Amino acid sequence: MVTYFLPIGILLSGIFLTTGCQNRASEDNRNTGISQSPAHSIIDLERDFKTKEFRLSEIVDSIEYIKLEKTPESLIGGSNLPIYITREFIFVYHKNRVLQFSRNGKFIKQIGRFGKGPGEYQGTRGFALDELSGILYLIGNFNSEIMKYDIRSGAYLGSFPVNPDLGSAMLSRSFKMIDKNSFALLGSPAAQYTPVYELLEIIDNEGSVLSKIKSSLFTGQNAMKRVQFASGQIWAFQNHIRVFEALNDTVYNIENNILVPAFIFNQGKYKGPFDVMTTQYVNQITAHPQFITFWETTRYLFMYFYFDGTKIHLGQFDKLTGEFCRLTGPGGNTIRMYNDIDGGLSFLPRYLVDNVDDEWCQWYEAIDLKEGLTSEYLKNSEAKHPEKKERLRKFMNELSVEDNPVLMIVKLKRADSE
Image 1 (cartoon, rainbow, N blue to C red):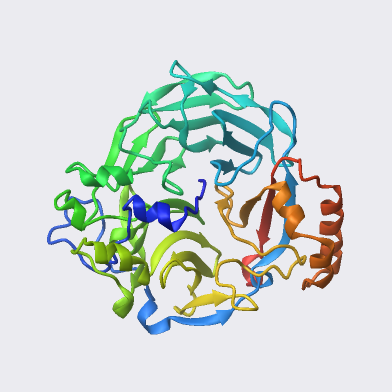
Image 2 (cartoon, rainbow, N blue to C red):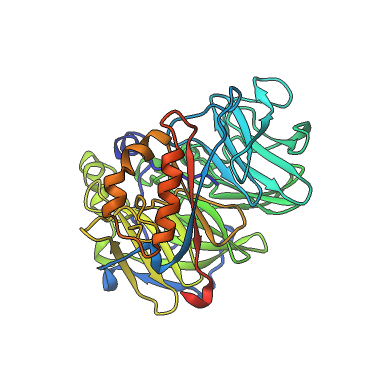
C-alpha cells in the first residue's frame, strides 16, 4: 500500500501520537484475537541504540527510473499522492481520478470516475489487486464499500460493504489483500475515540467479517489518555502478512485470522508516557522513538521513526544477530539511504511493490530531479558502478522539468548476497 510522510505539525495537530506503551499487556487478552505465543524477536533499543554508517549498496543491486507517460489524460503532479504498485501496473490517484500505467510508465486508462453513484468514488483509502483475476479493489473514503473494477476493460464489477471505521487515508498501509478470498483492514485512527474501536478486521470478498481483532491495550475508555499515532500498517513479506500496532510497540503476523507477535520493541529508558495526556506530554512526545514505516529484506527489518524532537531516523534490526542500530550516511544524514549505486539522489523508500519482496520505490517530481541531479552533482557523487551513473546521466538529459513524475525503484540483493 501507499506510504505517507506527513509534516510533524500535522501529526501533532491531529493528536495521533504514539503512546510508548510497549510491553504492557491487558489483564485479559482471551477475546482480543492476539496470540500470547512467546515465539518472537525482541528489538532491544535500550541495549542497542548505537549508530553506524550505511550505504545503499549494502542491500541494493540496481536502480530503475520510470517516467510516467504524460498525455492530456494522464497529467499528474504533487507530493504524497496515493500510489499503488504491482508487478505489472502502477495506479495513481490524482485529482479525483484513478490512473493506470504499465510498469514501464506507459499510460493505459482511467479507472472509474469521481462521484456518488454506483462505481464512482470520492477519494480512496487504498487499493488491492487480484493479479490472477485482474480485479482491482478500491476502498473509497465516504461510501463504506469496496468497489471492484476489471483492470483490462476498466468495467465496474460491483461492490460489497465495509465497516466505515476501517481503513484510513491517514494510514500508510491500512488495506491489504491476504488471499483471493479475504482482506485485512486496520481501524481508522479516528475510531479509537469510540468504545467500538477495533485494531483490525478480516473480511471476505463479499464483505462478511471473518475476524475482529481488538487491541490488547485499548478498551475505548479514557480515549484522551490512550491515543495512538497514525502509524499502524499492514505489509507482506515472504508469505507473512505483517501488522504493526503502535500501542503495543509490536509487529504481528496474521495467522489463521489472529495476530501472532513477530517483533516486540523493548524501548526501556527510551519509552514515553502512556497514561498522561497533557500539553507537556504533547510537546515532549517526540523525544521518544515513534515508529512511522517499515520495510524488510531477508536479513533486516528497516524502520523510520521520530526521535529527539522532529528528527526522523532510519533504524535497522538484524534478524540474524538480534542487534538494532540507527543508520547514518556519510556526513551524518539520518533520513535517507546514501545512494552509492549510481551516484543519484539518496533514497527514501515510500512505497512497496505489492507482493514483491525485493523492490522498494520513491516518487520524484521531474523538476525536483532536475534541480537535484545537476551535472555538477553527478560529476562529484560517489558511484560503485560508473556505467549506471552514465545511464542515469543520459536519463536526466532526456528529462524535462515539465514531465510527469518519475518512480525510482531499487532492486534488493538476493538473500545469499546480503
